[in-house]
Image 1 (tube, rainbow, N blue to C red):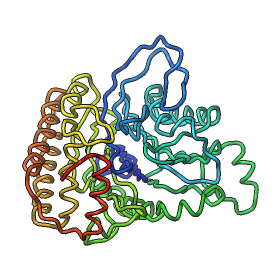
Image 2: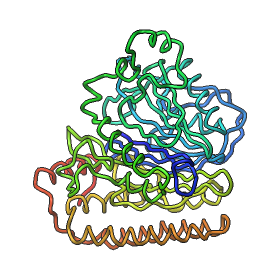
Image 3: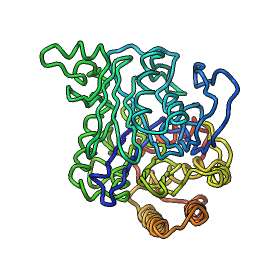
Length: 430
């Protein structure tokens, strides 16, 4: 499950576009933050996760967060400050076991397009010609259509699909999507078949195409209502810090993971009824003039994570290769940054609300706040690179202190067993 929010320059304090996403995946599905430079290609096709797709002569530089086994991306941005993310939506339309994943479509679009409207049209063409499909889970069956949020420094679009049917809406001030269709009959663009269907009295794209059972149990409408209201209540004053607070939100005031629900924006694993967790998060500040800065956690659970600043350049690509470490899989590997943090996160999850956990979060927020202040005074890539390197280093030092520390558990035995079970599958001993 996933959540995406966007605020246009009309709605933000500094008159910039802000795009953000929480990527929710299986709990052992590590994600990679990856920079891929501009490349020239001679081959006729590129192999996506399941199928081949026509290649172009040259692809743009991109910064993406992707599940370790997938060619595409959950979210990302390219060198033009063009950002995109997708969410799973459950519809009445059949989804084949092999095809283009929504994540593959994201990467294809980032590599080829330079503005939001062109990206929107590209994705529409791909969906109409190729369709969408493929199992989106490494460990079990997960088939779905996709909704997308696309944003550049000047405009943002929402594209919702059901198989090859689609509608699109330009965002005026703020918008959010989750795991449910949101557009009723107020679209700006639509596929020909949807336009024909809309001649029926009372037609609604969201109501007509939604799979009611799956949509209900995903609680996407509840999360979307929360994020949308949070954005609307702050229009004109929205900041990156406020967006980060939305991504860290839980449904209840006093929160414990063992009492969590699918209504949480910051999703904690909870067994069969809550089978995913937030695996990585992104907040991008897209500017018309000047540097667009992209804040990624690169780790799970934003409530226990820190956003680190990144920029698209070869220097940042080298930094990422250094700090992210070895390539991850679904098995525990302390040589990989995501898994190194995950080991500590799972210890903290089992002691959620304890003095150790509270002190850790306070220190983490202190580091993050300092880094955000320093970014405001940064001059050029060199300063940004130094600040980003220090952000990763200070977070790792904080994690290292807890890595070998025994932390008393507060969680009930039933929840401890849930975490121990996924640890077993990941070959992780705590």
